Image (cartoon, rainbow, N blue to C red):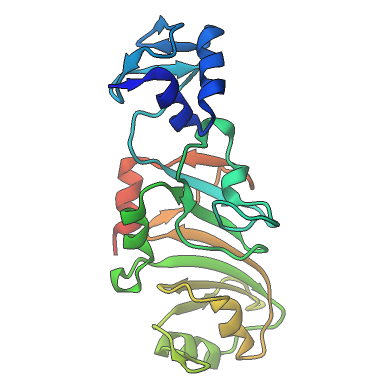
Length: 234
């Protein structure tokens, strides 16, 4: 059993003093009963509502964000705005981090969680969890580029895992890329090797789970347990 003020502070990533104030103002209900005592004992199994919003009872949370440009994939950063800061207040809990990185100017699907083991399982190349992107290019994609992607490109001194590349428009300037790695600026560097510049880049899928088309840029929602299975499917 845990003190109510501590549990609320942990869930909302706030201070104990702020949690106590919410309780004393009558903003907190436990199992539909208003509680005014900060030292009230409760557990993760209790239904706790703060300011009309139900707190998640799950130990781990999994969040899908449609990342806009201008935010870095980090929990905190001294100089830049982070994707965790972009979350609505009711989703902000302790120890959240983005599972994998998108560049500051790359948009699309970012998975934010507090489950380190799950994050490792989808980021490790040996697990073969694919990430799918759309790239807008300054010039058309030639067949030789597709072959190099699919054969396992040599990039600098590194031999990459085979990647899938296809064109999505008549001009052959919109490309879909499926990779299983995530090295520094990988997709941009792969195209640059062939003299192509990436003008826009968006991640649209992790594993078999696509980015929710109803999420506007900057918006987030929780990922269901069934959707988590889609992420890890090969």
